[in-house]
Length: 164
Image (cartoon, rainbow, N blue to C red; front, side, top):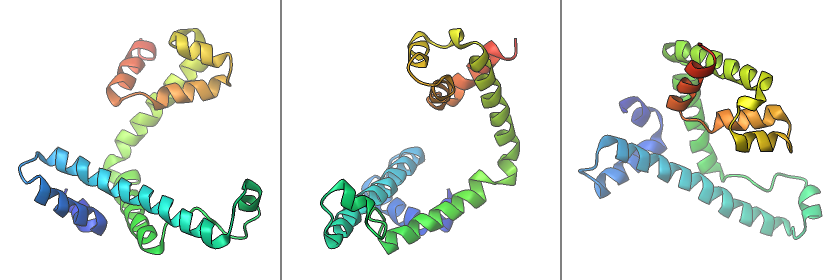
């Protein structure tokens, strides 16, 4: 937690707010509330800043949005700076972390194996996903199914279908 608080100033700011409001809460709840506040800031700013940009551009129709010379949906510069710092931290410490490389490799193997399995045997998908496969490309349906899985469930499915 110390690394996150040290590496992401906006996280630290919200964490301190959360600690004041919920001093006796477990660390996990403080962490989750901090993340929620960060996401609220990003989403709220995107909405408000986009409204202002649309108003300033005097855009009223979809066609005017398409023909707008600049991006209308955007964060303000302060919040975008916070987003960039957060993104850089996550890339350096999570997405490309050498200490997590083995887990990432395992995850790629598991997801790849399950994807290949269900592409070859779509009849083994849950019934509602089989129905979706009649309306959408199978690859999209399999991706959606896998994307909605928890870590625990995906490991169960891998053991059930791919390790047997």
